[in-house]
Length: 433
Image (cartoon, rainbow, N blue to C red; front, side, top):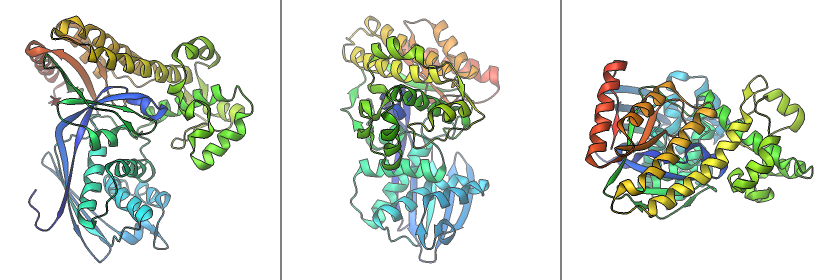
C-alpha cells in the first residue's frame, strides 16, 4: 500500500488450534498467527466525512458516512452507532472500523473529525481466521500512528473487542484481538482468557505443522448458532451459581459493574474443577431449555454481551460441559506439546486425539458443520501417522479446520484433500500454512 502521507497499520489473521469458544468462559486457548494480513491507510479529514475504500481479493467496495450520524449530541454512544449500522446493512461492514475510532473517542477523547480509510487484505472473510480482529487491530494501529497516543497493544486489543461487541454487534471473546496483537510467526500463542493473560509463545517443532483448510462454508460470530451457544454456556454457569441463593444479589451487582471478582470461581466457568463439574453439577443442568423457561426460573445470566431470547431452545448442558472439558483438553495439549521429542509420531497421536475430541464438542454444542466434518473424515482416512488430528476452529458452524500434520508427507496429504474437495464441491478452497 503506497498512499502518500497516510498513517499505516497492519495486523494478521490467526488459526485457532485449540480452545476456541472457551474464550468467553475464561478458557485457555492456543493460537497460531497467519501470514495473511490486513493493512489500513488512514488520512484525516476535518469535515466530518468518514470515507472507506476496500480492495480485498480483487473485490472493490466503498462506503461513506457522516461522523455526526454516528454520534448523539456530539458524543459517541456505542448503542446508537450499533442501531445506525443495523439499520444500514449495506454499509455494516465498516462498523468494525468505525467502532474503533468511536471507542477511542469515548475512552481517550480522540480528536477525530473524519477521515479516509483504505483497506487491503489477504485475510479472507468468513473463513474463521479472524478477519474482523485483523481489521480492527490494523485500524487501531493506524490511528495510533497518526494521533500518537501511547496506549498499549493490550488496551487496543480490549478496545477492539468492545468495538466488535458493541458497534458491529458480534459477541466475540477477546481471543481473536489478543492473537492478532501478540502472536508471533512460527510459534503458538497460549492465552488464558481471564480475560487477557497472554502466555509465552511456544515454538512449533520442525517435524509437525498446524495448517488450516477452508471448508468453503462461510462462518460469522455474529450468526445465531454462535450467540446461542455462548448464551447457553453462560446459562449453565448461572444455574450452578444460583444453587446458592445468596448469589442472586451478587449476579445482579456483577451485571451492573462487570466486576467478576464478585462471583465465585473469579467469575469464569472454566475455573470449576473438571472432576467436580462432571461429578457434581453436570446432571443438575438440563439438556435443553427455552429462553423463557430460564428467564422465569433464574432471571438473567452471567454474560454481558448476549441476550436470552425467550423463544429459542438452548443446549445448556452440552455447551457448559464443552467449556469445562475443552479447557482441560487445551491444558493437556500444551503439556503434551512441550514433551514432543524429535520423533513426532511418539507424541502427536495424543495431540491429534485432543483436537478430535474438541471437534466433537463443537458438534454437541450445535456448532458443527457437514463441510468441516467431511474434512475431518478425509484427514482420518489419510492415517494418524500422516495427519494426527484436527478440529473445527474459531466460532464453528463452518469456516476453517485446523489440522495437525506430520512432515512433508502430511502437507502433501492436506493438498490432496484440498484438491479432492475442490472437485467435489466445485469451489476453490483456502489453505493456511
